Image (cartoon, rainbow, N blue to C red; front, top):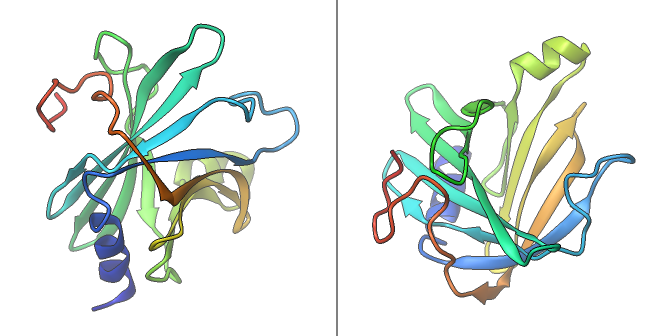
Length: 178
């Protein structure tokens, strides 16, 4: 089994489970998260060649949840691909959705980096995303610049939580997104 297959198997092993997490790293001036809201990752859909992993964020001011983001990993003969499915509360696609990139060389069974060709071209240096999964310990997702984390959320794989409702756009009781 090569490293991308082992990485895929590590993600699939979490299928059906949800975990609490927290903001671990953000660049100065980034205000996407405050670091005090509840975060939940849910390994919701685990097909042979597609994984859908919703990311739920509590909106502190209202006590409601932002269920707009789903990380989608795809596997084919070209390798692994990461896509971001962003939805509005009514389930329709957000104007900025389905961006992502292909896996880069040099990954391991615990970590894979995905290159954003668009962001790299804009900045002139390598940019993308990283996913790490250390079985029984931690799942991390974030952005990278020049091969280093620039923003990251960590989820404790020893802190399971109740599975959240479906992400926006997914039917209750169904794992398929429109």
